[in-house]
Amino acid sequence: MNSLKRRAALEALNWIEDGMTVGLGSGSTAEIFLHGLRHKNIQGVASSKKTEVLARSLGIPLVETNDIDVAVDGTDAVDDSLTLIKGGGGSLVREKLVAYHADVYIVIGTKEKWKKTLHDETVPVEVLPFLHEGTEELLLSAGGHCTLRLDTKKNPFVSDNGNFIYDCTDIGEVIDFHEKVVRLPGVVNTGVFLNLADIVLIGEDTGVRTERRHKA
Ligand code: 5RP
Image (cartoon, protein in one colour):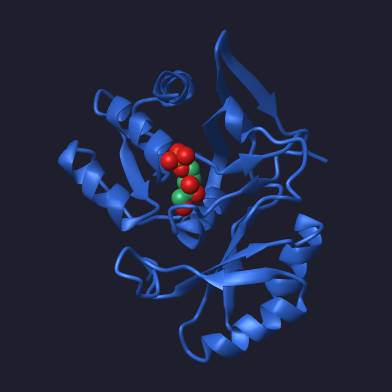
C-alpha cells in the first residue's frame, strides 16, 4: 500500500518547479509528497496544522496566500468524473480552499480510492459547534444518516477551524446531497470536491495511472 502511495506522490513531484507556491495537502499520501519537496526550492501553503508542523520540520517555508501555482493532496474516494470525497482526516475546509485557489490541483491516491460510484461513501460535513444538534436535525432531513465525529477520548472531534464534523452515510446521490446541505445554516462545507481536481494520479501495481479533467 505504502509503495503505491509513494508511486503517486513521486509522480506528482514532476509537476513542481523551483520558485512555485505549492498547496500542501493533508493525510498520509500528501505527507509522502511533502518529504519529496525537501529537495525543491518552493514555498508552501499548508492545508492543516498537522501539515504545517511537518512542513516546518522539513524546512519548507510557509506562506498564507491564495496565489497558488499547484496544489497536491490525497483523497478518500474519487470517481470517473473526478469528483472527490475528502475529510477523513478532518481538514476538508482548508483543503477545499487550497484546491480552489490552485492553478492546477493534483490528487494523489492508490487504486483502492478509485470508485465506480460514490453513493456508498461517507461524506464528512463540517459544522459550527453553535446549535450543532439543530444542524444535525437539518442534515438528517436532507436525507443523510449523520453521526458526530468523536476523538480518541470520545469528545467531539474539533477541526483546525474550531468546528465539529458529522460523517454522513446513506446520502443517495452525492452531488445532490452536497448541494442541499451546503446551504444549510450551521454548515461550513462538505467533503465533496466538485469540478476541482485537474489531474488524478493513481498508484497501481504496474505504475501510475493519470486521469485528467476535461474542462467544459
Ligand atoms: C484529510 C484528507 C486526506 O487527504 C484523505 O483522508 C486521504 O488520506 P490518506 O492519504 O491518509 O489516505 O482528506 O482531510
